Image (cartoon, rainbow, N blue to C red; front, side, top):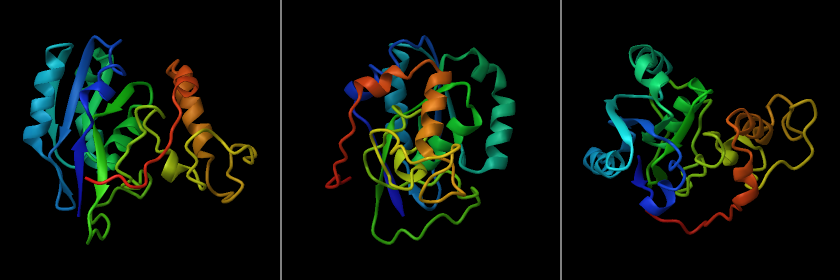
Length: 206
């Protein structure tokens, strides 16, 4: 079992400040993740006062089959939005970011480990793992986790050892930071890596 906790407004609002239309997606959670839907709706009240916001509450957004269906049903709202803002665990936000690669996707949450966590019991293909670090970086790395996508869990850019887009530690694996850089470039957001310096707090607690 693990839980999520909403990020402070002062961290999130400046990041989405240039967006006018927002699609706000809330995951109801599952038996592995405890999500405070009431807290998510309260955050919606804050956002809707500043942006034109549409709220959608969904189930199991980390499930590929479900997510593809949601994207199909919500296609008009997705296309009309400047950004997708997600209240879910790290796996949910990474799943949406991967599926909507041409959209700006932001998370409102940090995901924390709880004693007794055994791993997911629903299929999400293991491609969007979450380190449960309690200090989510996905808003700055285009929805791609640098801790799980990089074999060395580097937070400040690539090590320089990748070759032809492959990791020097595991040549079957794509370089996580190359994926992050390419996606940020496609979103015209590369400058965020110049402004932001990541220092991980290993004492983070829920």
